[in-house]
Length: 529
Image (cartoon, rainbow, N blue to C red; front, side, top):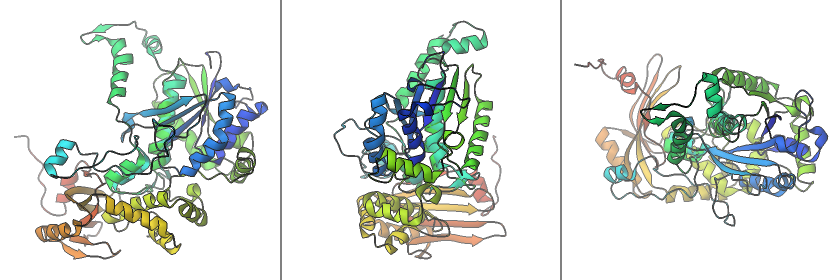
């Protein structure tokens, strides 16, 4: 790609839609068309994936077996990234940037290519420093995670929640796919460097009391940010620290947004000098026009907030506008052409995804859990933690739990893997206070004690006696101690003790104390004097 050529970035989600588009462009030159009809070459194309760290292992196998050899044969630049940490400000980490792709890094990057794919393991108490852990809970030790990266499950477990809808869309894809991809486009494809900034402000390199401003801004600061990056932060870690599972919020999933979209958006901005125009191909199919409209609105909003740029970015949707393919068409192409008729192409989805439009219908989901019981056990762990902290929070709506689905399906292997997780992990006593009204719920999660699985129930009894909680196994069979449970005209107030794997992070929103005091005691604004 040169300054005279526009760049083309394909957002590759690993599923049949974007895989079909990647294969068509790689093997059929006549199909490589920009929105205006102009052709483009493979040296202008970048295939970009943001890993959520929660994909089915079989999805990686399919891409490594059938698609990556084609991309490598054609020398197509293939980039894989992931979120670097729990905050979007942490940016992304580049897992791979190559024209000879071999591995699909769905669990983060491994140094030993011959080693088997790491298991889906939760991060245990890594949000507490070793010093604080030793001071608060003497004798408790934890092992570091087997692989780096911050994935969607990490976010869900930290928050003890499940994937959710928000603002009429899934929040997981924007956070864990799109944002990182967009950032990468800004960094690597569009380019925003020293010369561009100087031209825009009409200035020249300057000194300040801190030295050369240009060195600080474009070398030292980015290098410091890179050095400060943790080894990676996956969705599982976030879920574990929060003690939650993937959720809908305001009718959208937040997990993909945070652990795919955000990471890919970050990567879409840092590598070489600017090009005159960048075209970003998105694999929406016929029938997904509403998703396209939302994407265009989000892109317009992003453009209005972006720094001034002499580079134009344009989203386009070839599967809709050029190929006229729906999901059935891309599934057929991926199976019959990409996979050479050998096997079907699995939908790209996290192992704990509750959204039928993404994960597939119930029978397809149950089949995958039967085929991959170890990964199913990890999905059960996310749901188990969320239910422990909130009886109403199952992976599926209307109280439908993945645990009951797999139990009814006779999937004892998955249930055994869950039990192995529960017995191996340290457990904690959490105090959860909650105020639920018509708006966003208020919640405080406090970590009171850490024990082994065998002794945690005794600790719960002692904490309940100390705080005056009433022990109960209602409504789901999990033992909790209810300190308070009441309703006002507009709110539900809960104060409970629960025992759960020590994966959820202590947290509460700013203003929590004042909100809680409104229902329990007169609240006085603190004075400065």
